Length: 460
Image 1 (spheres, rainbow, N blue to C red):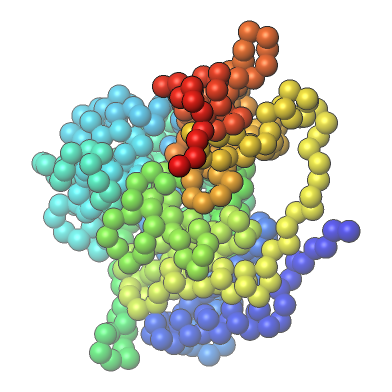
Image 2 (tube, rainbow, N blue to C red):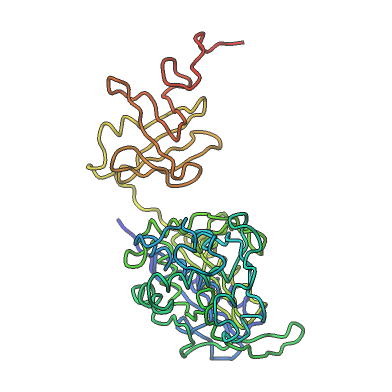
């Protein structure tokens, strides 16, 4: 029997609203919106406001700041998947004359390109884009703070370069590519470059008094791919569902999974984790969260997705500082995960076409030296190799059309795995990137590098 729970339990909803209420009160913000997505569907949203009876809802726009970078990264990954560029390509190959062309596209996506965090000159988030009409005005005379690839250093100008890259390769504006390739397919009609009513106004709240000041809302010009967008809780819920599962109309699940893999350490900051290809990665409350935070004067925002739990938390607020949007988004995920844990999918046998005696004969224990590993079958003729006791390197492997497998994660990502056969056709050992796995530890007569002592095992 299959059981479906679309709505949250009343107790869970109260806990979620309480968390949003605390965030609005303690964060001293005019308004705060929270939302939860479960298994791709927006199942809850709630808000608190300083104006009685006038709280925003899931259709109210807020500025989302650097969450925009994830959209830009998706556009770049689409170009990669179409064969129009490679992630290891230097930027100069596709976007010439920037002065930062030695950085690779992957380095720019993961903020390891060595570029400065901000633009030279006036505070770009609060000043006119007319001050930065060209890429040279965004990068300055010396765009590199350090050699590309050496360390993670968050860079807003890096994503300006990626937006210009999209425009050059596509031959349309970044905004047009975004609308056509992401927003329309995902049904995100309330995500725009400029605010469209109903939308929140941005405010600064005095740090030592309960008074407010309106923040300016500047068009970011060339910097738009780094932080321009306005969106709603409902639209970000659709985007969170995409980040969890992919969507062939936008980006294949395998490519989205690639974005979620660590590409660089996060460096110093308020959160501990890593950074993928356009996505922040965070380990919190025993679960892995992927997504991004965002801020611009007058606004803070965050989207966190727990793929394993099938949950996403969204937090939006209209104050320059005070509300901890990232912490709230993570707490929304935790509250639902703990109160209403996800039901596992029913166990089902593999399809008959994916199993044969030859594959079955490879399953079971294997030994790398004296380390015991187990090999089991997965879907689509994939395999999983994992230690049978203690810590060790585990990995999933995708079947290759020509035979053998390739690693998908962890230490063995990209490494080849193959079964090496004897002259009579029987399997001698597994070769994993030159590591030999035998059926018995140091089995005599097998292809153990360095050989096996003829005297065999012995006691003291």
